[in-house]
Structure formats: structure tokens, C-alpha cells
Length: 281
Image 1 (cartoon, helix red, strand yellow):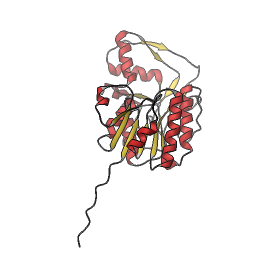
Image 2: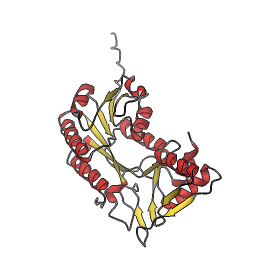
Image 3: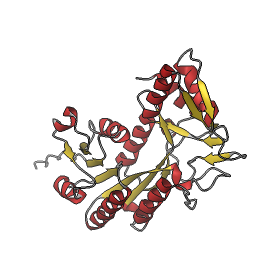
């Protein structure tokens, strides 16, 4: 009796919204060799225009569902930036689409959803509360997703992101070169991550079909002024000018610590690894 030949498993189809941004593009580069990966771009660059996996998307002008309906992804990863009204409308449409199709939405959120809580770090199941317009936007989109079945969504709360090619490190290098003052917040206690570690974590969440809320920050905390001083020390023999900004007389926390949705040890990171990452090109 002839045995039926086993068909190879079909690659999971991923659509990254905001694939021309710093984090969106880093996630695309991490996933594209493993999944059937597509992305959107806004800023016109030849590398995106010539890549058949990329679609031009203008948040203010275009309907995101046109691209989603064309790609028919298994997973949508939203790294979108832009006007707040446009972001809310786009995510409302995405939530409706995901509910009607065999699809999951992964949303890159921010530690700022907790920026009104200043006396302690925040964990996955803590109630969100923000004083900033940006934080309130992220909360609004998170709340849309949390009305969906858990299996349909993942919320990834991300702290400050560093890394050799990150906008934050590029700005610090420029300020050092121009001998400009670098703002530090001595009373701010935070955790951090790198673009490389974040993309590995996203890869794991996609590959293992994980759902729910994830805090993707380092497992330890550090004062902002100490962190920036250590990063500059790592960058070389500089004599930085610091502008110390005190927003409060007390220590203020802006940290998203993992507790309920812990990732494997190799996907966790600490602040020293973040500091060391700034020399990686």
C-alpha cells in the first residue's frame, strides 16, 4: 500500500504595519527568513519601493483593510506611528477584521500606559493609567484589543529601546560630537531593552502563537542618569555635558517588569546587556 506523501507545512503569513520605522524594520529583518513576511512603508526609499513584500501605506489617506485583505495574514504586527485620530481609526478597523477572520493582532504598546503611577514599577495585570497624551492613546488601543478573545491578540509593552543603530544612541553620539547638553532625569527609575532582544522576543511570541500581555523590559531597574552615563562611558572617552531635569523631588518609576508572562531565560535581558549593546553596529 502506497503511503501518502506528507505536504510541507505552509509558512505562517505575517504583515508588519509600520515596517519602515526603526522597530518595524528590525522586526521585518528578524522574521522574513522564517515566515512569509510582508510590511508597509510610508517614507519613500528605494529599498522599500523595490521590495515586493512592502506596500505603501499612508495612515491619513489609506484604508488599512485594503492591504490586509490583499495579504490575508495569519498575524498582523502593528508598529504604526502617526496622527492619533488615524491610529485609533486604523486599529478599530483591524480589530473588526481580526474578529471576522482567522487572524491575530500583535500590538506594540509602551511603558507610558503606566506613566501616572510613579511610586512603583508595573506588571502585566496592573491597571493602566497615564497622564501623557501618548500614554492615553496606547491605553485606548489596548482597551480595544482587550475586548477581543485573548487568543486573538497580544499586547507587547515596550520600555526605552537602545542598540547600536537606535535613534536614541544616534542622538547621544550627535550631542557628544556637537558638545550639546544631554538631558538626564536623575529621579527616574526605569528598565530598558534593545532592538535585537525585542525582535527575538517578537519572533518567539509569533512562532509559539503566544497571546495576552507581555512586558518586554529588562529584568532589573536603573536610574536614568546612571544609565546614560554608563552608555556614554561605553561609547568612548567623552566629556559629556549633562542637563539634569527634576520633574519631582521623589523617585519616579517608569518600568514594565515581567511577572505573569515570563519568557525563557535566553530571551530575557538586563541593563548591563543593554549598555553593552550600544557598540554593536
